[in-house]
Length: 263
Length: 246
Image (cartoon, rainbow over all chains, first blue to last red; front, side, top):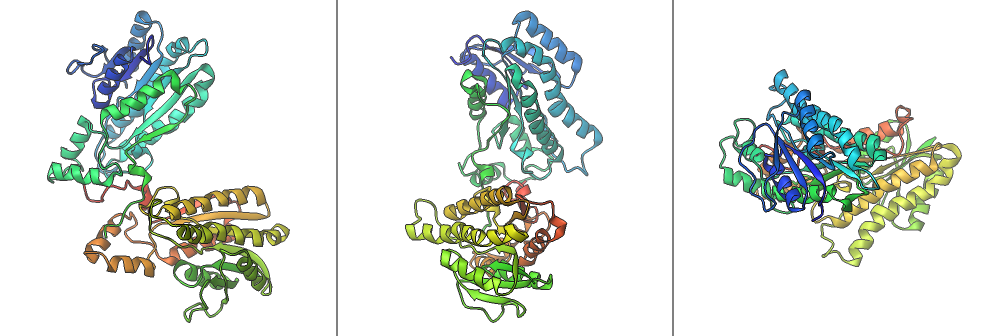
């Protein structure tokens, strides 16, 4: 029980990765708030379910309300996980201004807003040498590009830079800030990428496509949400008390390799 | 006369660099483990010596000094052994580390006293494999990471008289690459796939790397030191997933 006595807020808490993080936090003894646009199915985790917060992270009023509620109910916030994110599968030429703005509103502004309003609560948790942990979601796409994901790649690069900036600014207050940069993780977002009408799928057999993707990975598989939750859990715990300002790539070795000629 | 030393100058990238530096007005001394080839640029000098040996590096320096003041060193000599760590022998280690690491060290150490007196530029040829791995190229990948690291150390320790930078080439079309494509199951498909991985729509040529060497050696790069510049047609900006898969 690494997170006993800690309070956590996970945005995108009903998404593929968010659910796994909430389940893990609950199992580790934390009090967990799962924030998302809609409640979706309940979380059937051994630790019970997270407390649901209806939240559009791009809306300042809603973010303030969410923090007010956590202030009233828990009085502090030890862990903030900014896992809410959207992905537009287009080149910049095909991306509309609305789509571009929406990508930044959720992925970048959302991270900004929840962090901004969570910081006072996190300072309350960071006392007596205990650190609070803020975990953003970047992406390996913030380092190297997948085709047809231009706005997404740009937002994740912004999250990486924001992560380092926040780590510098709030480290002295006992708040650690890190970003996890996942590669291909088996989530509804990935399945939508494979089958969607954007650049994904393209009428190819989904099974073959997925195998081809796995084969490019040194681990010959893509990741599961639990793989991400494992690292989130460690970064959230006191064991990670010296870890801050880093971008943690978790991609089964995908980006460790140079592209290979098919000979 | 400004003398430029180019190691591993007998073929491929090294020969293109030597040719370019002759055109830029340098007195060029090329070197390699073999005798001077018939196709080595006419305007350049040649010395047969191995950079992996301290004595070889000294021999190259003495040959260069008879031509004039050494103002440019291009460490291009390198070898690759296509093996994993488990398969690599002591002889593989000595070969790869000898040429790629010790060779660069030997040559830098040889020219630095002169360059610290009157200034100079060192350009090391690293690799994109220094920061992300090519499979079954373990010692090569590691040796190129050494080159990037040594580049920074020399820039820090020996500025402001000496500027030192590295170039990380991607896939450059040399005789070696042509051979690899010829051996592919479907050479045409292999070429198509390789092209699709390059945002600029082609693979590199030795001249592309020589262009960067020429620029780094020039006064245009007077404020550039300790840097590693990637010249790969955009390849490493893209995910390693198969192009066209999605």
